[in-house]
Image (cartoon, rainbow, N blue to C red; front, side):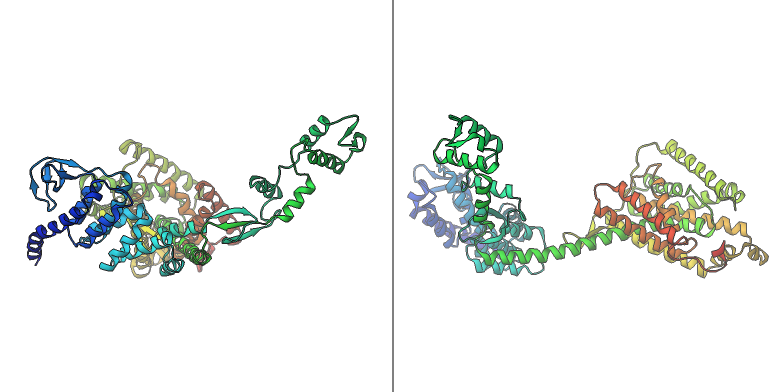
Length: 627
């Protein structure tokens, strides 16, 4: 079918070219000496001919490539390779090029839009729509409507409504176009509506579309109001004390000023009266006294007047923008909520391992952040060997768990087991291990940040509209946090290890009498918490810089998450992560330029919160609660 259509167009092109040539021949005088006023009928005639070559001819005319062949006077198109006839076939001869001025070329360029918008190729049509949207003009409106009559394209229809709002002279059509956008709140619509509500400040306006009337001393200061009267030439400049004194001194004659004795000029009113007399005599330039200023302001009417004269249009634009503002506020709140959920999931993922080592075992592990760092570096090392980013992440997750699980077991066996019930020494020992692990990472990987690249399917963001969006990496971390919440609950409630961990947590002596080895359980629990931290490191490394200090950026938030939520309760850890995430994003929203201040205020709030609820949001119940 496509081949048949191409053949028909090929056969028809000479006929169409003859029609175009006939139109050009009939209007030869107007084409060879074109003007902005006379070229319109030629363009209309070419468009009415239905000739597919009309667009090519106009494009050549606009680009100054249309010429007249010497000898027979035929119209031809001049190219770099030579001449072609109007049908696009090569031809011989020499030609003189027609050179329309910039005004004619502008008319032709506007007319070309009509042909381009009617292009059957959707991609080329979209290119034209995008070009018009970048630089709209009133001349584009009619070609858009002509194209819409031939093609029911929603993109064309939307652009036509935008241009109707800006350039149409029919107020009803503009109001209908504004209302036709409904709940749309896109940036280009706001860009079209905002200029409609632009105002200018006028004094004593006669008619016009008044936005609001201003009261001197309330809506603007009296000085600003009077300066406006002076700028508009309605009132003279204000009489200053220095200016009045200089004028009076300069006009003292025989101990008087304008017939008023100098000795009586001891009040402001007397001096103003003397200056008024000089002003009436033409001795000094006009200047307003305080009484005249008050009188002028009382008599004046100051108002902000819309640049747009049609009140119905401004009312519709204001109503639409108010609705958009409400929706944008709701969308910004939704976007802030998504950001807070994303941050909460990161904190929860970083703290879930600490919920085991600190919440269950009561071990203050200051090296927990370094297990996160070890997991991130494990992911980086895997990507140096496995270049497929998806496969490398799938390998890195379990490998990071294994590496940090083993590191946690070694640390528990060599250090932690000797320091149970001695929290201060545990804190100092793990802090020293933290510094040692950071230096070891610097020695191995250097001080430069290392990239941990996300798979291609995690690039980009999940966008709901122009305002609400969240990156796919953050979505993946949110899902991973929920997954590990489920894994944690399954291990602690459905497995023998979880039963034994809970038994040791509640009463180690009783658990030992039942045949459970508290030392082995503590080792496995510490290893499990460290392994989960390693997995968190891989996830965090996908969007954060992988450096030896990576873990230190999350250790404070991790401890706060566990303590605020409730020590020893995974649901409390989840609640703590949500509280800290929402609190930090809320503070950052009020002070977006200073994230350090936001963290400081958040810590102060948490300190106050702990004073009133020392056991956290969800306090642990049972025997362990009294430990």
